[in-house]
Amino acid sequence: MQTDVNVAKMLEDPEFKALTSQKNRISLILTVCEMVLFFGFIALIAFQKPFLGTKISGAVTIGIPIAVGAIVFSWVLTGIYVFWANTKYDSMVRRIRERLGG
Image (tube, rainbow, N blue to C red; front, side):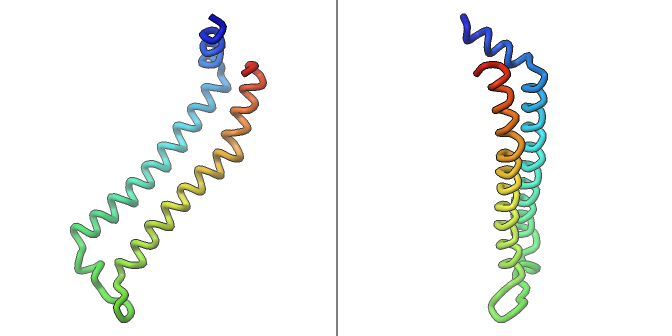
């Protein structure tokens, strides 16, 4: 079958292997960063309630800017992935498709 031949050809392609390796690497790095951020914040909530409840101004506690920072950092990690995908990944996929006829 032609499709099986194309898939086997693609899976053996060194450029495709490099692409999947790069994608896996960046995905793993960003996932680990997000998990450290999330579970670190949850650990702070669980074990450092008095610290998070420390008032910094009026009714604002230190936990509020930390929570906002966690959300913003998550957006930054997403933005990093989107930037990488748009600038590197998409062009590599396009190049492989053109070369392999897909």
